Image 1 (tube, rainbow, N blue to C red):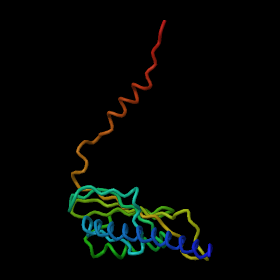
Image 2 (spheres, one colour):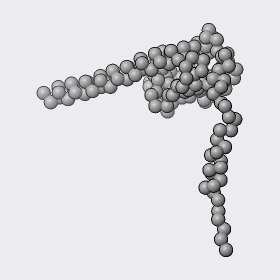
Image 3 (cartoon, rainbow, N blue to C red):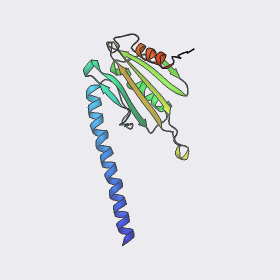
Length: 165
């Protein structure tokens, strides 16, 4: 009887966690599809809650979307090569190495897609998982060319040495 109760509680807990995760994925995908409808996202990739941040609306969108994909960086490279063709995004730069970096432009906006292998093992010789980071900025996102100058002044004050007689 204890085994049955334990199995029931374990199954209920695991199912409950999965329901919350599925709900988050569905709601997040709706929001991202609304705000960034012209940037393709792989159907099998999961949106990561913590590092994802989106600001603005329409063509004024800026932010970062972090996805975990159950397929390799090479497969995701092929996906983005095909999926962006009909969306109006133009590839302006690419680096294919251990980390893949694709830079696109559309209507003055820039999108950088970084794809890298995750540290997880590939099971039974299958594909390794990958992390996809999509960063998007709009033309007026940067107002000041050196917004971090104030940090340098603070750092200089921290490094002051007072000499005494």
